Length: 204
Image (cartoon, rainbow, N blue to C red):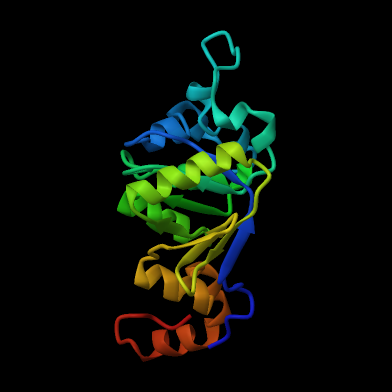
């Protein structure tokens, strides 16, 4: 099996951006009217759009509008993030805004699965740990956060905390088998061989 095309995701480092609030659903992450695009290109600018702008397109108070977070790549959220509809546009919008990893109290299962398909770890910790990290990020917007996916730790400032990465997700990211499309492409010969052995698949 060749996984040369799929990078392993053992560690993510960068500065953080805190988005506070429980039950932030996928419609808040990317409003439905922006899902009419043929490709996902350009979705990043519409991330959290209705939370960031009023009806006259005036900026509202939101971390994604604040200049100190414009280069951030680690999103820190609260409970049940990504709930609601299963739209894959939500993690696509976050990735195209620049997010490489999400740390939170909990995630909707389908949202976490859609993140995994993009190589974005969704890392969980308890409420107190998350709130402390969010406060630290607000005080240290340029501070480094290091997520060790393999060891399940997050290090920031002088502190290192234990976090949880879903075991199947951790294995897929660390072993570099999270991109199923690339996996299939790299195994076309064995797929063709298997197809030939199946009685219900007609040979070309």
